[in-house]
Length: 428
Image 1 (cartoon, rainbow, N blue to C red):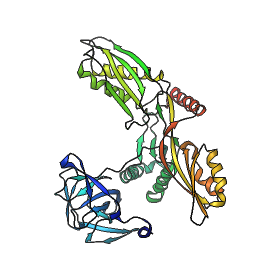
Image 2: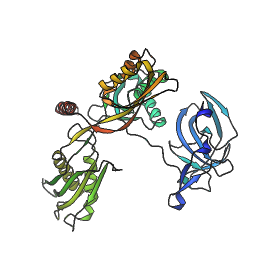
Image 3: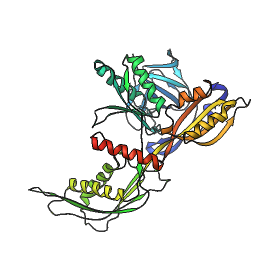
Image 4: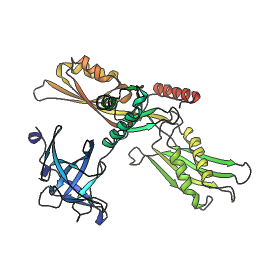
């Protein structure tokens, strides 16, 4: 199937960045006679150590060959190369351009470029999307705590889209990833591979916050308690970034003169970035904001970095709440494949979940149809079992993150109310 339907490696143009020529784009040639270039795209911890999966984009790779990590001067010698056949390994002496192999004895991260030592090339790193959903999990038995931590560390190492953190307020372990199925797989692996069954909390969607209009701010942070105090005033405005902006936030120093000494500007920028970490509506990260500093005031004795960081955070809160802020929810691209007789029911079910139908494609024989839709992640919980029951077990679907979009007003009010309740109870 791969040979019949996917393109020959020589039919696709792949590029690398030449670090010795100011990242000039270089076309890779899918020829085994060229100098080697490859990309590590997957890592796995096995009983023999780290297994690194690599695609050869140019040249050939031989057992015992010395290769370099692109962008560094670090070289490694390959003690063993294998082809993977499910769980079986086949040792090979040499592989050519276009092939996928696994290497032992190489410590690296996903997205690392390897090349001939005479080259200094790097390929574009693998894009790691933001997590869109979180779950609170814990082992059912406290005796499994060490195993639990060890397993999660391994999973994070293998999968850069999985994040693990401990909530500072509740001391809960939170795993975050690309959706319900993604996280459910890791919960199952904990029990299957580590004999560590877990208790799972209610899924939590990863919201974002943003502003919708410009707002000015003028905020003074002043603290005096004997000895040197804290004093800093920041003046400026917040405004939304353009929808097509390639950055999620922007800091601009538009001051004329030195009302604030230049050495305190980095502290103001740091305070702005800290303020973005937790919004006032739902406690979610803030995006799509431009912070412009236009004026301020300093004290000859009491001004310091802490004072201006705190002043900036206060100024941001002041401006943000006056800029008509809203909550954004993750929207997923959902492709559902079902037998044609279930098309109507499937479309109706997606619409009930606030889905927007983007199109449909029938198979050549007309027996299957693929329905493309965009659906809020909030509405996708439990969809897998619903789809099975609607299609007599014959329907399948895939889902990937597209963007964040405004949450409906009624839902936004509920999220804000829940966040305020948690803050009052000390569990925000």
